[in-house]
Image 1: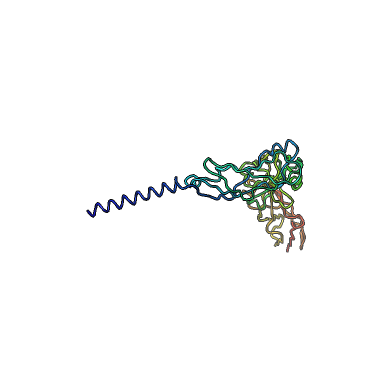
Image 2: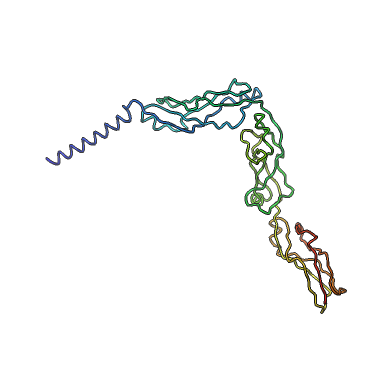
Length: 301
């Protein structure tokens, strides 16, 4: 008897849960949901461009939308399910407030759009040519570029007049390691920047990438060996720089552990004299230490 009562209670509980789920999911008339930071897509900008116009400034507009519908439907709606647009067709130069429209899935109603109008400024569209500037990035300390070339070396910057005016340079950022790995070649994403080096996002470029060719020159500090001849049994002391700084490609520098001078003849020297050092430098290596410091004071006793 007791067992039968227990079974009845369990069945009653299960039925109650099923009925509650059905009511909440299907029978409940409406439920609401709020989706924030929905990106507004500007449409028909191409129509403006055909008229020689463009939307100025940052077009990253966002709105908040309130939806209403059956609970089982509303709770499944994601940001990507909504089509949020602002149509700029037909607008002329000047400042305008454009309506934001939201299309939602079936059985879902848009009941509110926060900031339902966005403020845009329409200006004349202009285009200018800018030279591509190659910029070393990443861990490129001590590295310099030699015989650098960019293809293309100029690009066309287009957009609203006030935005294009902000562009001071079109940079091609590339790291020394990328060029070395690519044996002197690498692709770079082009970026339009203002006078402070900040990206100007509101403009478009005629091409997004450039092919960079350059030799990467690195620096290295190595010991300096001063060579003399003709000293015989004389006691000779040398006061000269212990190290010098040289520059070359990573490959050329790899096997260089020191730099020697051409031999200085001290056979006829008595007392002290200063000599300008002539270095025996391998091909492709440049000495960065100023020649004014490449002096050896030699004393013969």
